[in-house]
Length: 324
Image (cartoon, rainbow, N blue to C red; front, side, top):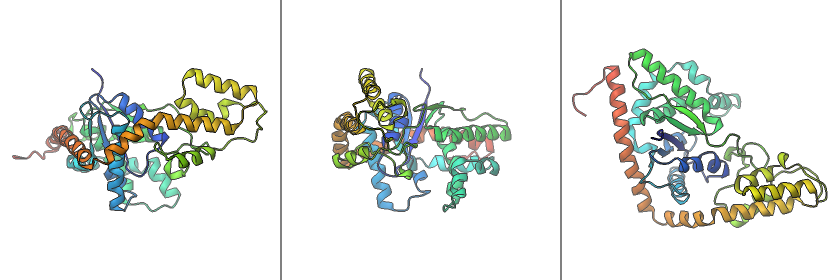
């Protein structure tokens, strides 16, 4: 039997190619029995526009369904539809050392950059631990930037077990969506916060603009080029067949093949790859009632599992209720 997988994604704007290859695609490939959620509570650490948050929640849901998520195979839901997780997060907080949270890279980065930092930002890893532990997750699919948070989750679970002399939680392990980060148009890791991302469903003009802006070296059309050092080729390789990758690499090395031509080939490949999914996404967004019902049904299923885990944690703490 396949291990139970858990993963979430924040509804913080249009999803991009880094989200797709680093999270969405591997999640959908391993969706049977998985718990996949839209992390709207986590989004509140930075987002303030209520209308935008709800819009992005639905957009994320429509995107997942359009790209192949089957809600009869996976439990797909909104994080905020499972209040048991926030109660569990508080229980976990009682055994979480301050120093553990202070070492979180995301928190340290915000402090170092003098960005506004709330208690929620500090508490983020503890809530993520509750997300993971509530569903008895065996594997957590994350990007490389989230590995530390899963390690913190394991530390918190171990602290709880030691404090209450009872093993309540399943200890999860990490699996990376892709072994290396997907590069953005500037060659750095693709991220909305860096402004170097290419949206999955970028319009024709936006896609052309983004791809043509990919940073390259100054070699002329006639000069040979090293495909292993080029962002255009790296992105092309994510989509192309082996034969097409090998052919583009041959053209790079031979010379007489310019970056402009390579960029146009990449833009066309991205456009073709997501064309059918783009149409399905638009159809889902036009059926908001059905979309919300899928999420709510997933929330009901998720709550049933989270309730059992929470009851185990409450019992270990001496908080068993006579009636629930």
